[in-house]
Length: 480
Ligand code: NAI
Ligand code: MG
Image (tube, rainbow, N blue to C red; front, side, top):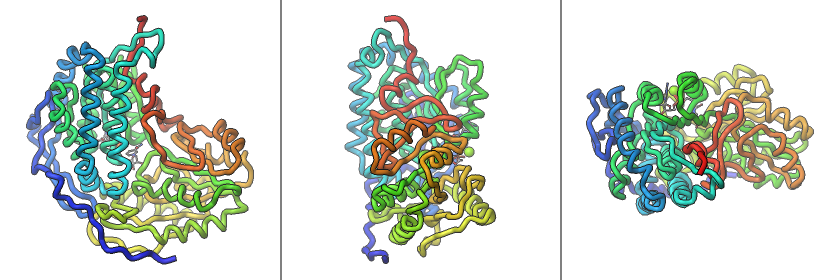
């Protein structure tokens, strides 16, 4: 099978206006940082500088937390129905400005426009719509109890789904009456800053949402600020553990969404062509930079050869290149640091004796790129079977029986997600009962819905985001 030739179809970028410099968004205004320090944010597909963004130091963090505290009184005592209107308005403006936001997300993060346009931004809007709906119905979510907001929520998010992670964090927090200080990841601040503009546009009371920028030091200062009541973090397991240690013994409530090493389990009776699409979506969606990516493929031995032939043929048709092109399947890796990590771990895989397959593919000269990669001959003890690579790299293993599949799938320090492909409903239920994973997909993968809770077991973290469960992280329940 060869790749079809298409004329380039890049999305126009004129719709987006990026400022040369931004401030932190504190108390309803963009303000210069006390630190006087800025960092450049780039387009990872071209390495072109897009803008300069402030580094918030401890005093900037303090200013943002104070603004959030000040806003908490009025926001938490507002009639829930009125609060809901603001959250609805945010959702609608995200929809109205969806194209602009999708282009900006792709420019700053490197993900294919078809993903930011069809998945990231529509889902972000959907989360605001969903939680707007709950704002005045909390007595139905928690019957017999009264749900009170916690206060100021400190939220630190990663770069793989910048706008979507912002929505997962901010929507339930403000819908339940909390105020927020959010720090986007240092490589992808721009859609969060556009979101700050949207907060202004909808007339959100100043201080309800504050956006500060910076890297790990800023995040650390935010989560340890004494006037914060709740911390929500998505990112690496390493930093998650540091935050948990930092918060131990304090009054702060914590949820952590960390890494994963999901098994995608293919039984011999599975619809194999569909499964191939599911495997591709599982590991190449967002270049594999997905905490719930299906990075370990477990195939029943009897169909392994056949399935791998199909999969390799399919890989040869994937298009890597300009993320703004509507035909692109594989965009840029988010940063040079992430690309280095992927290269390092792929090198380890080769040294450990696994067999590497990559389809022929042209790599652009500038920017950060990694071709779709499959490792066969992988054993359970290989580092590429155990560690999160967070790139477009699939480790393939085989099994013979259901028991073996369960044992291998659970043989990981993580437990975020898993996939099962089989025609037998009873087998799906049997497997789902035994897989230690927060989300188990059956005959699909990487499906998200705001009504469905998401979160991990073991080192993948704790707490749930999304759904009715996602409200619990932002409220204390008291007698009515
Ligand atoms: P990271 O955990 O360092 O960064 C995530 C967020 O935490 C960013 O906003 C960052 O500025 C902030 N942060 C960093 N250090 C902090 C600290 N000490 N206190 C508070 N906030 C802090 O992740 P990084 O370095 O970008 O990626 C490393 C690896 O982590 C990736 O290769 C991947 O394996 C994993 N990762 C997992 C994610 C997930 O969705 N579960 C998302 C991003 C990374
Ligand atoms: Mg880090």
